Image (cartoon, rainbow, N blue to C red; front, side):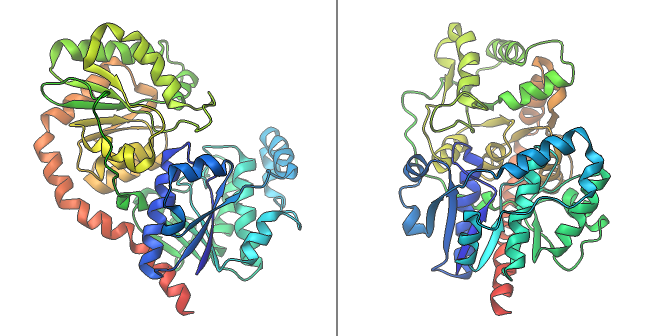
Length: 411
């Protein structure tokens, strides 16, 4: 079985890496010889992140440039959203992705939340076009372990996406918010509730000497991102997130014996500044130099499995990146998810039956961070017991996509 993945193009986002690696784990439950083509915009660096990729069934392939028609269409519909009711752009006849699809047996669209309005419409249309191209070739096309939507603020887009999602061979979603929303759009037989495949991501031991903070009562892992900063600013926040985070940590140092570990989870492998947790958290570290060895940062360059091992060593975790929090939750660590979209809320609601440990991105500040941590501390034993009870089921659910693929192979 040969599979083409779409929805990711580099491992600078360790969440993408986690999804790719764990997807291979699921697929090889169906076919031990499954081969997956993984698009990469940086073949050398991505390969270095996963030295055993070929042995594990992954082949990195180049990512073609985004066809100009999608960028042009995005500019038009961004100004006039009603035009999204007209036909969307198609993948060019000679696009290299078509050649990849012809050589594969099925398409998986991963990425977690690419089927949403969290990014630009051109990006959404591009992933839709790739899936439509596969379907036109008679290849099964699956949305894989994702959150999707909501699209209701743009009715023309919602109608288009409802039609597209109904045509997909299978839509596997990772939380009940998305499942209920898509059922409301009319999806039925091709809709499957699973769990994020990253709940199955393995850990790779990584030596902590040299960067692990001093903390007599353990370590709080903290992941903040420039994405959270941007959401706060657009919501009209009067203070800087870095100032609020520094104030939170400084107060924590006086009222607890915890250490704090700053944990980047998205950091471009070429060091680019855009959307870079490492660079963002380095600014926070600089503000906290006076706190000495109780505040430290994870060194750069770790892969997703190594980062999961580091996160698993924390007593508590607060994270903005969804897959940083999944790394913590799947390791049994009491965790607060900083949420800017449906995905973190849905995953928490399903796992805990409540959203008590979800912090709205727009409300992140020194006080709310402290209150969120207090909730973990006060309920630590109950949270750990709950995770120990629920995680076996979540790992089973994360593997349910294997059954969907197996059913396709029988047809």
